[in-house]
Amino acid sequence: MKLTLNIVKYRFLFLAISAILLTPGIIAMIYSTIHYPTHTPLKVGIDYTGGTTLQYGVKEGISNEKLSDVRKTLEGGGIENPYLQIINVNSQENTDMKAILSIRTKFIAEGSSDQDKITNIMNQEFQSPELVQVSSVGPTLGSELFKNSLIALSLALLGIIAYLTMRFQFDYALAAILGLVHDTLFVCGVFSILGLFYDVQIDALFVTALLTVIGFSVHDTIVVFDRVRENLKYYSKKLTFSEIMNGSVNQTLARSINTSLTTLITLLALYFWGGVTTRDFVLAMILGIAVGTYSSIFFCSTLVDIWEDKKKSTTPVAA
Image 1 (cartoon, one colour):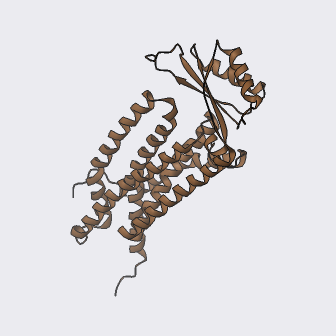
Image 2: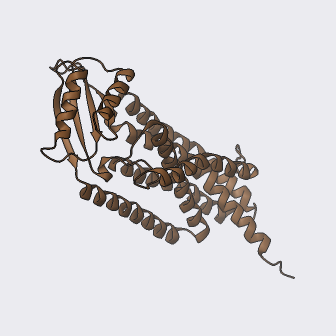
Image 3: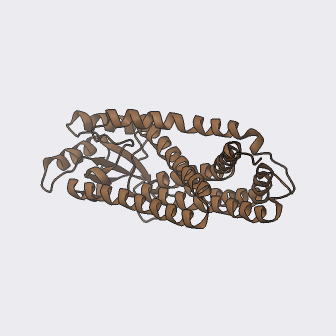
């Protein structure tokens, strides 16, 4: 078999790279769990905690400095933990609004004075702002959404585990499952860091991105393992398992990279030129697909090779 990349030779280096990728995120998630009032490893948005989003259309551009000033004014006016986003308005629309300022805060009950406070502050900061949308999620509904998201993730993982166990032998299935954990931890870790430093919050779209990443990652891993299984039928008596693993990875390497690259090009276009409301979702997809391609080639395959070596070393030699 043609060999251009020796995965097995540097397998412990690849495992070390995985540890380097995961460690900062794990530390951030532990820190977040301890310090956040919700005791969650990531900063959760109003989809899960309950809250209200108010969107105001303004006739002037909003700089980052202005955004910071508005946030401080809102906090000084008694609005707890406001989360502000700028949504650019399409210039082709028949409107004189140049931007929409989205303000997310704790749940505001109907008839509460907090909405009037926010509107009054916006009138002070901008010229004739227009309230274009108000949406609220109650605390009970937010808790229910969070529970349903965890159930969806758990069921998806259990289904994948059951399928892989039936499709492959246990070593392969366990390696693929650890690859999924690897990819999920990386994406969650990055978003935990972003939550600490840039106040990035996760919502229901983030869970959708995670489920998509899990599906993409396990698909890539199955392609590699299928090739290993096929090559074992023909080369098991001629080559060692490490040589078969190397050859199989090299045979699927171009396909894996090309598939991921074309997907990433589309996602990058969405990230830079798509709407701000889906930017975090697209970022989670970009991170997940990139690390999923890495794990299927360099992480899962090396785990299987290490276990095969360990089985050979513990198998007694016949006299």
